[in-house]
Length: 527
Image (tube, rainbow, N blue to C red; front, side, top):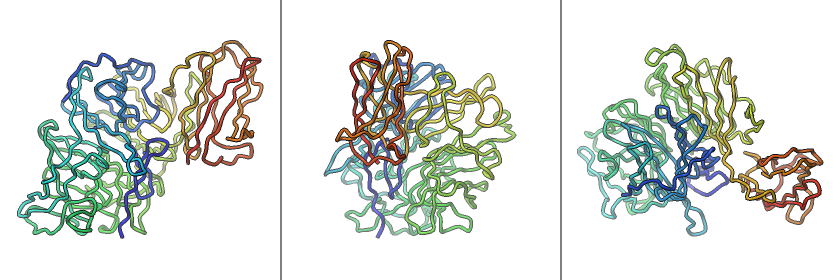
């Protein structure tokens, strides 16, 4: 029996597929009068990073964020009419247009279900936006003509379980990867969409002249109990107008005729295969034109999580970083565009960010990331995204998105060497008597929680954690002298005095600042 996809809400709005976390772990034109201009991005959960000329765009759990000054200030599209309180799962840029796919969780039948809410695009750098509804089928869309075949297709008529993981572009065409909606494309700026036929699980290739007998459906339905993992799409890479790679939960599909014919690469149909069939990310290394894939274990007993790369267009693959759950890739190029002499490969995973300067032979993890000016550190090793920005002054910035903050390394000399800056989104305290903790809830096996408070005069500070019965769990600091500061942070890693991770549940913290009235806050631990 095929494994069933179970999707649920967990601390960082991650999605669990095959018991594995998947990121996120969608016609209006109106002036953005309420858009906020802030010193930080709107959220600490950074799903995607995109560079468009000198603009940095972020897809986050609290909408879209933009910076035009390399992170000094941010424009946040959250709680505004165009975006509301939607999360952004994917962003893209092509031909002067910025695109953002949105979604949210909806509670149905006792569980949280992801709901795609469409795509928003702007032709003027985010000053105004157009809204496209989530692509769905009409109930009668039960067949697709493919070459000499008329293929049955299960209509996807609702946005539930149907949201956009990735997007890519060819000439006048936008391609989107959706879970239950499969692979779709639009040639009219998203006004209409066409479903794209990929090979079923039992075929390694399809072309229009083949005689085919299968249904296009990601789950069992009115056409029978068959469902195809290769019709569940998660990643897209377009090389040019003809060559397209599509990652599914059944392998990597390649087309060299603009998405008409396809050949499939998976863990069992090649001599030198990918590590696993669930393809979460696809990127191209412009230095040597190699293809890099985050290849996760799907349902095969010999599959494993890791990185897979190919230098011959997918005919053969090498694998690296076994057992790492890969989320994203970045490349630091040396030389000039069109004439690169080498490239470092960076890989964001759920347990760290790794880097190789010798095409994968060896990997070095990023060090503990501490802001060089504020002495604030990242409290998670769960990286969601990594991208490298090559600046006009020939300097290089490495941007890292995590479950609990955004980081930038202005690399000067050496490996992982330079000036680190951490961007933390946090609400301003209402007064000196205010405190809160974030992210909340939090998962101790992936991150720490920050307790924020202010000091209005120099004093000794003690912070303690208690369980629901007000039993002491952990003393974070005791009688530590603190100077006046409107923003103080202390970390709790979710462990008790003996070093053990505490059970799931509600905890309380108490802050004693000199002889002032104690401050209290609540923390929820969820594993």
